[in-house]
Image (cartoon, rainbow, N blue to C red; front, top):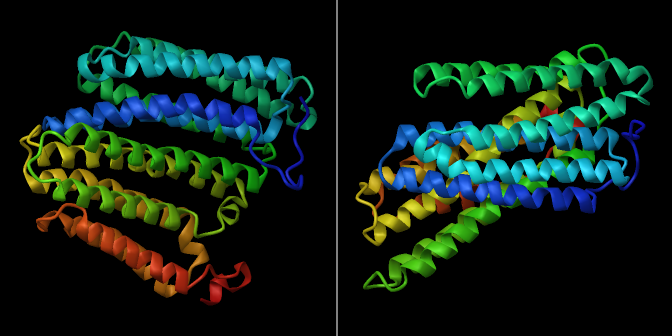
Length: 380
């Protein structure tokens, strides 16, 4: 398991990586559905808190595998089997999401998470055998990940309440500190095009969840409304918004955002908000449909905010990590301003209308003003 060449030409996602992503489709879908139910019932604090906690487990497990794969993917039989074990852990975690949401019981989710992370420990230990000068880093990864898993097992002993939230935050800080601890002296290699392609593929997964969720909700609502006009309108607007988010995400050259270890940390960690917001957007669309069909008694303003807040977070996050340094002053004014403008959508009687118009406007600006060449960024 030798370190991969970070300058290897034509490096793309492997079939195993694409297969690995499929189990995360399941986990994201279940987490988004549970958030939808909580928001639709008006349980905002509980829903958002539970979603944030559970989505961290999904995102962090995916991200750790992705960065390991870009450095040490051998695609031999043992690597594949270990990856399948991690996939099993994701499915266990996904199965425990409803119970964690509804009853505060995190047993299954922690069990699935620990299975994934222990498998990751074995990968790092295997890599350490032939990592050469990178051996200390690989062993620190294995040690750090293993130590934090003990904390997550102890997490199950903490009763639900404020103390559990505090413990969760502390353990998350421990988790995200492991890469800093492992690589502070010497960094493992990463392939810029490969790693950003992997992030792009996961973005497609969460955006696709929005399309699927809205389509399913509309199908279920067809016989429950007197007029199909509002359903057709929100369906069209959802497609426009999702397509615009796709366009905005893939506008900048993402590989420029991970040219150093510090920048790669910022890029990777901020994607928690990118992925989480995109998946939450699908829940917001379903909340809007619940209000239209009378299944939810939320006010129109509250329902609209479940859509506009995730979109604003998505825009600001991707602007911060990928667009900002590749854009001129016009784009750097339009994108964050657009994120603020979408928050005004709840004052309109037609859901998502202003949001769709704002996002289309941003896309038009991006089309007219392509990314600035790296040598001109400072002059723009």
